[in-house]
Image (tube, rainbow, N blue to C red; front, side, top):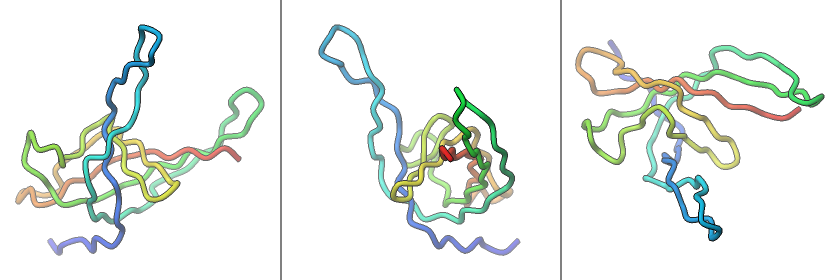
Amino acid sequence: MTAPRLNRRLVLEAPVRADDGAGGFAQVWAERGEVWGRVSARSGRERGLAETPVASVAYRIVVRAAPHGSAMRPQAGHRLRDGAQVFVIRAVAERAEDARHLTCFADAEVVA
């Protein structure tokens, strides 16, 4: 199997709970670091939310693997960001038997 061409710099972010100042918590995103990846679209659809069309696209993003337990290993619920474009990770799988790469299955939504 040939190595994938990782040609896009992405920022890995993880959700953290932050005090909202009113006795509760809010979810904010903390940067874990930068990773290089290959981003490819899988499928897309459009749906309506409260009379507003929303385009949703599923992506396959291949990144270098990080050891289990590492802060740089993507997980479901994390996200990858490329500027204003945000990819929410739904699942992560090891790409091959050698476990040198991970495939992140992610979604991105855009309000049309």
